[in-house]
Length: 368
Ligand code: SF4
Image 1 (cartoon, rainbow, N blue to C red):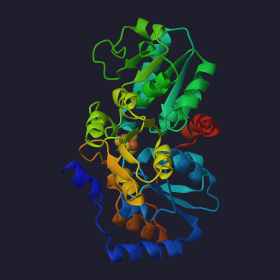
Image 2 (image 1 turned 180 degrees about the vertical axis):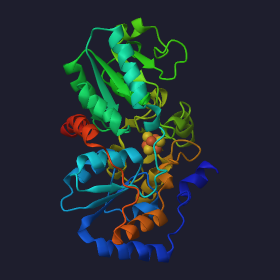
Image 3 (image 1 turned 180 degrees about the horizontal axis):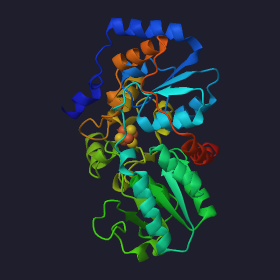
Image 4 (image 1 turned 60 degrees about the horizontal axis):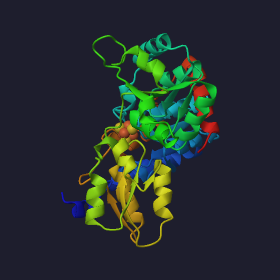
């Protein structure tokens, strides 16, 4: 598909929702009333997000889940780690439901708790300096609990800067996981040179030391986990050049999960909320090449017809796991609830929740 076609195309897979499904959802909602809260992440396709009571990014939805009063069921149109976070933040009697259990996150899957425990042993053996673990919110509940237990915190792409600054007031080094790109971009923006960072590879097949001489961990300030977002790493270093050549005056606006080389060439770097705000506040006639998930970019193009809004890449970068949520699956889960059946509940055990909340509370108390 050509770039011009992409800019004007309907959303990928955004088929109209059958009338019968719309009616099923409306009936179930009417029956469940205020005891139901449907949350929708900005990367959801339009056919799903239209049913969300609240839409937002990870941070905004986490806060909405925490503050929901009188709700018995939160149906989370997002991915697995978001539902886990919501379960930790909501009271025990609130059940969080994921419409489709296949909606995971490839980035969150790149760091499991066993790998992180091994890494912690390697790092703490390598140095006597205090290491503060920071996990991006795009991670499992077990990793959030790990951070709570070891004096660390959770961050989002909105407050990563504040959390890293906080971490360096608590200790000497930072272990940042699972997204090496958010970690690198954030630390570099704070003035930490790339030479003070090292990447820990959990799949190091040789010495089980993360692919580095352990002396490197003693020498560097920031240890980045070798993980990434399979959507945002599709944007390449030459994409800003191509777009600027093709559309003189265009501004490049990217998410910090993008590669360092791409972020360095951007005019504006920011979280999903910042991307939305930036376009919303721009004057008519502004041209944007945006490096983030395709459904959000396409929605921004539809909402701001007085501006030129395009994806940064010459192809659609879609989050295939977010895409697993469908209107039909949402209708099925809601109807089941009206019949007293709770399917696809995402539970987090009390011990994990206790430690995870410590790390999450630090996240919620700090904003950039
Ligand atoms: S966009 Fe990337 S980080 Fe976000 S849910 Fe999809 S795979 Fe995970």
